[in-house]
Image 1 (cartoon, one colour):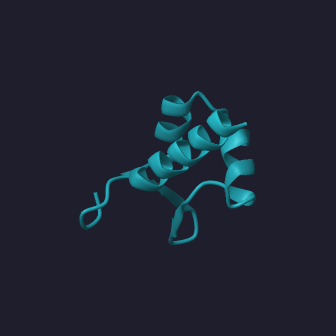
Image 2 (cartoon, helix red, strand yellow):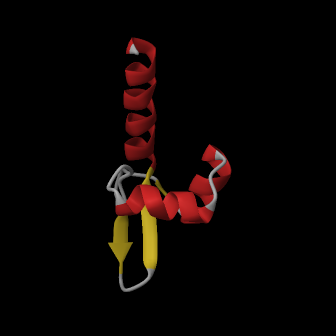
Image 3 (cartoon, rainbow, N blue to C red):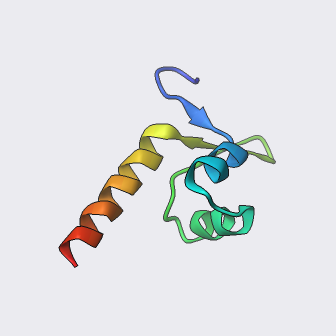
Length: 64
């Protein structure tokens, strides 16, 4: 937790969303999932940002 935000590691995101590390990398590269880079190698994903993207995509799927 940094400040009030809880951050997840890539492994935690992959486990929770049933993604492969490569799929997570693709989502990150396309800027479809929020992340923070700490230092040169540590990637963290804000839990609230992940939830917001899931909610947004849920609504888009429901409208289609």
